[in-house]
Amino acid sequence: MIKNRHLIDPMDFSTEEIDKLLSLSEQISKNPENHSKKCSGKILGSLFYEPSTRTRLSFESAMMRLGGQVIGFSEANSSSVSKGESIADTIRTVACYADIVVMRHPKEGAPKVASMYSDVPVINAGDGGHQHPTQTLTDLLTIRTVKGSLNNLKIGYCGDLKFGRTVHSLIKALSRYPDNEMHLISPKELKIPDYIKEEILDKQSINYFEHEKIEECINDLDILYMTRVQKERFFNEEDYIRLKDTYILDNEKMKKGSDQMIVLHPLPRVNEIAYEIDNDPRAYYFKQAKMGMYVRMGLISMLLGVC
Image (cartoon, rainbow, N blue to C red; front, side):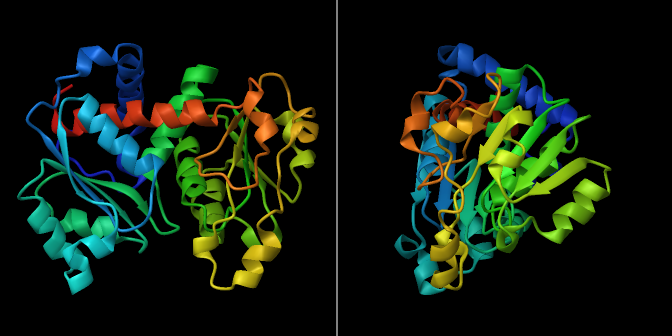
């Protein structure tokens, strides 16, 4: 169904295809040993032009746990990019060696360009402040596993909603499932971009509310999705310093949330979630990170047609 396709945007797959992928990923999470040789003889090209811990390592771990191998680079300076090679030429070359490619790039649209020149599936692992579809799949799998459904949820997105590609992608994805309500929590300087509101929320008649404080809506949420204020997206360091600690989730704020609410975070965190929250049973961000490996195992399997 999705064999040999690219994944650049969360909207590239239908909800039926996403549901099938999530079901496969859930099966893998329960019995990973049953899938340990699915990608034997296959190679993943890992092209990371921007620093990453969880995304890069979870992709590499996913391929290895499927019995495959990994080639690539973890920073642009260690590749021919430092000599001026174009994305088109890099992907054409890597596609000669690998069966599937994952790419993270600081420039929006770079993985899309790569997919236009690639003979093998290309997965977008994050392009600037634009999209991060596999983090979205991770989030969806975590939510569905815990809540049992992706419908009829109240989701609070908190922090950097302007540059936060994980937030943009998740809003896109959850807007396709019925009866979800969005709460957008940010300072005025980091509000959700107008195009997200106009092209997704307004266009699809999604109920959404904008807040400047977590306390204004936390008692009503099923999911609180925290994000860090991203220093690397700011042109002015003074603005970053002024805004970086706007939101800090601590025990006092968590008391206002329901017992059924869960806290997610794409990680890395800086100060936005106090360490005291880690022992709260509602803290799911490290379980979420593990789900990322399973969903990437499922995605690789389906794109290569080995599931």
